[in-house]
Image (cartoon, rainbow, N blue to C red; front, side, top):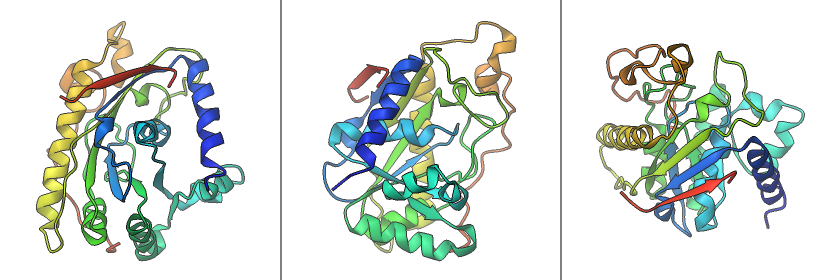
Length: 255
């Protein structure tokens, strides 16, 4: 029985409504109604996990996100994270975190992973780690390529938080499942996952309703789209982990 997650989601939806956030959720039908899956998403801001999790709710699913140990050590966030059964990632004990994620997947959970492992300052896809692909392969579950766009305008690295009423649009797109067979090529699958996530991100960017009011306001747009965010380096190849470990759309105001 879920005792913590439902009230936390209810509180989050109330906050989103007060902020006037405008959510567009697309591809929610790809989230399985039962069984495990790895939801792999890009990472633009500190609130990404709360927004990405909304895309699983039409299927009646709760996403167990992998998050760094420091979040679990927080006196307020820690008990909530444990109550929602998110997965503690201790970089000094990566194998244990990996095993916990695979165990959750085999138990039928949806596990959320940010393959970039850090917030992107360019607002493009950064270097990938292959852990998400390895988990999906080892647990025998599909990968769900996912993209979020607009979340960087709410709260991201190096920028002031915008937590008042601002009516910022946030798009979350989920793509068709990617299956990595047991014994499959992890690096090839990671390249394909990145390609699909990139396509979804570009779709979300193209459909985004807001544009910067001035050149100075273009900090949240990547250089590729004429914004002032730092330009990324050459497209990186997926990186191995140090330890093994258009569909119909829904638009929702204030979630």
